[in-house]
Length: 224
Image 1 (spheres, rainbow, N blue to C red):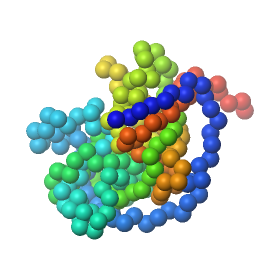
Image 2: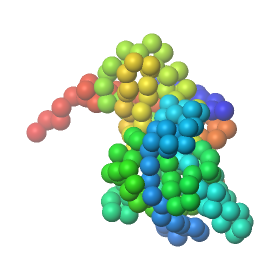
Image 3: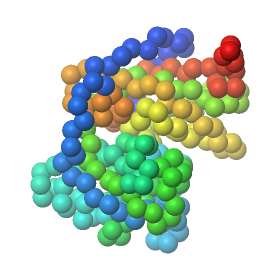
Image 4: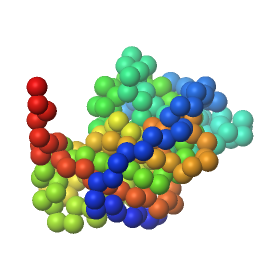
């Protein structure tokens, strides 16, 4: 359940203190072969798996869960990246722990952001980030604002997300079109541990303030 308060007017960005914390070494990490959730669903006959209802959650092997439980480590927050392209790191949570051993399933749009192809290697590690209190988005196109009750559409999409990563792009579908929104900023609950250094927030049972900035195609060009 995601409880949301909407900010209808833009507000100034605030610097979070967690962004200055040193990066902590993950307590657990592994590498897995990656396949899109669509490919895995077709192969395994899982009609309940869909990119629309999966949000940004991933499916991991049972072995990963067993290893984490055996070491008394949490298993609700993860970070993922392409070992060949480490500039982009996404934060996520588990949809299930039933993938084939050595494999991981995630939405195709996340694979594209990580520059991963079917069967590519994904680095998966545990993570630690706070419950979210604020998120700022920017649509790529003004078409998103033309959607009736676009705020509600965004919030319904976030209901399926485990977390948000600042600097990433999410997809919002209205049934006929897919809209891209950049995650410009996130803020977590003060006082909670944050190994992401201000880059990720958890969306589990949170009251989230949401701000939508003017779309990219409405921005005034910068003067030379």
